[in-house]
Length: 189
Length: 294
Image (cartoon, rainbow over all chains, first blue to last red; front, side):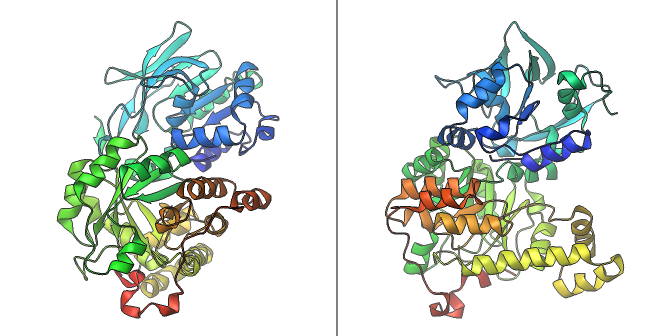
């Protein structure tokens, strides 16, 4: 609906899968998996409510299909958002804090060691959230500077940074391998 | 190990704004309305462009107190305007921690010859442009985001359309040119050869480009998206309308669903009166903000 949509689509296509834009509930029907991109979570939330997307998104999550949230997308997925009474979708077993690295002047890039990937991943953090705590069902995939920045919980994958802003498609490939029919596809190097 | 203020971090911030609406606000209350309506960022300033135009005099960076109040009030990014070439206003805004600086022709220029060397700052900048050459020069100085200039504070979309069409037509031309034609085109546009090679390689501008300067209705916002803008800035259009809340929401939704004309028709019903607007030919040449900067 808003944010770095084009970059995710390019990354999906670079991994040999087909990407489609989702703006309406009916767009969810044909999908195997869904990425919630980076952008502004408050703006996205308003559009989700306005266009009746909340229940269809929760149903999608309920169906067991993989969902991946980057930055604002992670905030939308999380069960708890620190400082807010209600979560957004509230489906992923993590608690996140918004803008937890500071304002834009504090935004940064850094090489990360991520479980399951060989070699460092150059990650771009923009007014990024971080995962304050991961529930028992969640597996922590990456910690940076003492903060959890990537985790997986069941069919949900979330990260604080923006893999779509780099030319490294390994995280998209990792996510696509969570689709049952694509499991076992080798990750690109 | 970690690095701040890199091109990827500064340009990436603008990528996150795509498909969104950035709204001018002059106080915390307006910022709250903008955020609730779904703005992806707010631009804090002392007077909206139409008031600057009406009042005349020198327009400067806003009182830091206004900007700070806005920063405290909303969780979305806060942008603020510095005068063209005003190094110290820009450094003040950076020190205050604003998320983006607009080196803006809406304010009275501090320097009629030199723009800021924006790649010296950690904070990212957005700049106005009317054509690809101007876009190239601003990016060359380190701008991380562009907006076509339009004619601010008029509520008249005609200049915004002209500038967005111009930039996009020149981008398309560069993409279709053969490599051996690019150097001449670089000379003609006043753009660097390396920049044009990058545009050709990418098939687009290397940074996000929003439309600005005259958006007054949901249909105006959708028009700019239709013409290829990555998003829109709305200055006077919201808080100079009869019903800012409704205008703000309708402009956000029309920007997201810019090709859904039935929806835009619904959004446009009974909105009340849009800002009055000014016919461009009635503005004296010396008062056209778009002529500021080069």
